[in-house]
Structures are given as structure tokens and as C-alpha cells.
Length: 390
Ligand SMILES: Cc1ncc(COP(=O)(O)O)c(C=O)c1O
Image (tube, rainbow, N blue to C red; front, top):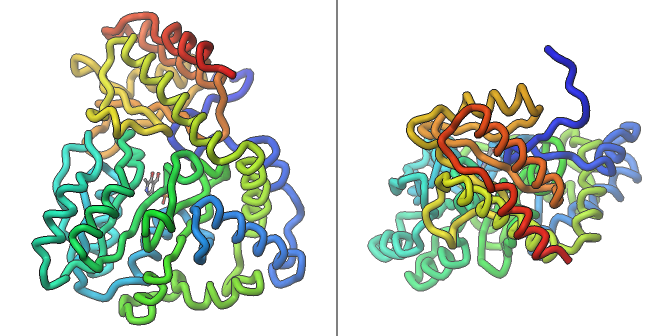
């Protein structure tokens, strides 16, 4: 291994760069999780998270990855054999479907091409046809991290309302929370799933559920087996700032600092920053003459961009070269997109010059590996960034 000078560029779409302020907050001494200081800390972060999810309802925080928060959303609201409507928007939607099936749910998985988001018209058609109300929940991945496609959750909600269907709406915001505007309450979402390692700028280790009153009522009747994920003891202990088991103490210190940073910047500015960086990235991709995986411009993700390799060229050869030569990690193609795409993460703690450096690394990598492409992507992005800087 040759010595790498300077900072690694972590441009995968999560885990994302952890800001120095958060790293310092994480490094505080561990405290007693049954003492008064911890209780103040957790009440503060639980309150702050409500502003991030845009809800006045409960938010729970598990010491877990996002997959745990997926399982919690299903295990707390549904019963064995319940029918669930899900959409094959990409790799993560498929993994969530697998979790549901393993829990004993009956999933209607609407096929997709991994280049589009959830079609609200299909939601309406499926629910209107379900006059018996056999479908108990609709599961949507807001931002498909494997494809860089964002689904229109508010439109899905409207479709459900128009169909007059009582199914719960469960939404995965793992790579959109605190990066792409999201309104748990206003959009009538019943359970929103999130985690720490993306827009919240923390290391992996916290899984989140935001819970509506309707989801809470459903949880009283839901019969799927649950223990670790059970909302009930969590919500009961959280009232006083405590947890039913040992929480991830130091991650909560980091969370407090990350929330503070997001509020200092202002959520609207955070969302605008992500959109602007995504637009600059797409301009670079167009100038390189490469193809975006996302086919519908209104569904292009503000938090990451997936790029198709031309002429059957392997994406992983390019990624390896960029890692070895420029010390930058780009996202790999997942599932059936393995080796066919690379993903540029532009979410979390990120700024114009970090994006410029990222795009420089890609453009140099494309040239060095002789991938058929044009020059000028960086210039196109810089033109856009400089003309929109304020
Ligand atoms: C959209 C989405 N959902 C779920 C997950 C699973 O989260 P985890 O790997 O933290 O379990 C990921 C991980 O990247 C994701 O991007």
C-alpha cells in the first residue's frame, strides 16, 4: 500500500463524511445512560429529530443500522400473512421486500426497471382494485440509493387518499432524510424509516422510526412477533429520556451536534444545497456524454447521481482506478447493476469545492481508463456552481 496524503474522498452515497464538529462530539467520555445528563441529551435529540422528520408525533431511535428500522416499521404495525404493496424501484426496495417476506408478510411487489420511482397511478389502480381492503400497508423507498431515483411520496399519498384506502403508508427515507425535503406529518406518512449515516452526517449505528397516531393505534393490534424492536417499551421509557436497553450513548452526542449544524444552516438551505450540487453533477455527466440511470428528470435524486458506463465498460475497473490513484471511493453498482454503473454521493456535509474535487477525480479517471467520454464535465459543473454561488 502506498501512503495516501491528504483526506480520503468518501463519495459513496452513505455512510457520508462526518464533520469535525460531530467527530469531536462523539469523542466525549461515555456517560451513565440511566443518569440525568443522559436523560437531558436524549430528550433534546428526540425533540430535534421531530423537526427533521417534520412531525409532532413520536420518533424512536434504535442502536441499529437502517435494516433494523425497516424491520421495526413492519413488526410493529402488521400481523402474519398481512398483504403489503411494495415497488421494485431498485436494490434497497428489493431488500426491504425480502425483510417483509421473511417476517411472514404477503408482498405484492410491483415490478420496476430500476430507472423510475414509484408510479402513483399504479398505487391508485392497485388500491382501487382492493375493495376488501386486504392491503394493510404500502411501502415506498423515497430515495432509491442504488439508482439515484427519488419517488414522489406526496403524490403517492394523494393517490391513496383518492382511492379512499385505509392502508398504512411506510416510507424509507434512509438516503433522503435531512438531504431532500420530506414532511412526515403533512404527507400523512404512518412510519418513516431513517438512519444516521447519510444526511444526518453521523457514523452508522442509529436506526429511526417516526410514528403517526394511526401507526401507533395499529401497533396495539399488530401480531407479528417483536421484542427488541417493540415501540411500546421504547416510547414509555423515552418519555423520561431513557431507553429499555443500552442506547448508543456517544452517537447521541454526535446526533445532538449534527442536528445543531442542520438547524444553523437551516433545513431549506440544506435541501437547496443538495439540489444545486445534484444539478451541477448532472451537468458534468451530460458534458462527459455519459448517461444518467434516472430516466425521468423530475425523479433525479438530489443526494446522489448514478451514471451508466458506456459500451459495456466495467464500472468497477474505473472505480478501482479512481480509488487507487486519487483516493476517492465512489458507490458501486448493486444487485443487477453490478459493474454497470457508478454512483456519486453528494449528500451530507458537503460543499462546492468538495464537489469540484469529486468531479475532477471522476473526469481524470475516465480519461486514464480510456472510457469513451468527452472532456468538459468539470468545466460545465464549475460554470453552474459559480453562476449560482451567493
Ligand atoms: C434506501 C436504503 N434503505 C435501506 C438501507 C439499509 O440500511 P443499512 O445498510 O444501514 O442497514 C440503505 C443502505 O444504504 C438504503 O440506502
